[in-house]
Image 1 (cartoon, rainbow, N blue to C red):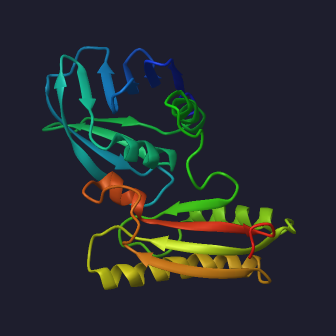
Image 2: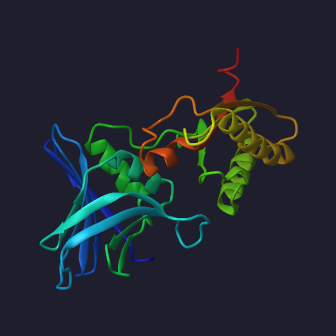
Length: 253
């Protein structure tokens, strides 16, 4: 993992973000001018027999949760391509998920880590004419994503919230926090509304312990305002989120 390295290159006609796995394989995200983004995996040794492949978003070894399938593809002469909902896949990887590819009928899996991913992803977005950072990483908000049905905060989420609280404790311009909680569209709308409220309350409870004098407002939206389509696992993962928005003095009304 320490040798994992993502690199981004490109020009006005083509942007590429690539991860080279020694002399074994090359994984890349490719955006051509006027087209969408696709994922490619090129196996550079013998051993691929062809046939189908199953793609999934997997937790990193230090994360909790199960792998979430995202779709199927097919090997063509040692090369695999996947086109569906790649922006949501990229967003999930930017939030720490790993990409897993399994050959159908075989126990073999290819794991594409998101270690050292962020800098290359920012360059890839700039190449495509987008902002260099994901929403929620701009110093004015923090975004936490949740696995399906999960209410409790993971150890990694608690660490991110504690780091945020430590930074805000010394910022005199901060007047409050707005905690906005969303779910995907799976399940009954009333249950989703309750789930989004419970996630928001758990985030607020941790922050209140470290920032007792700061005003916290919880807004539970349930399945409203999705960021991505709910018909793919990657899209649903992106929609299951709690956004902590930082309100500063010049923003207060």
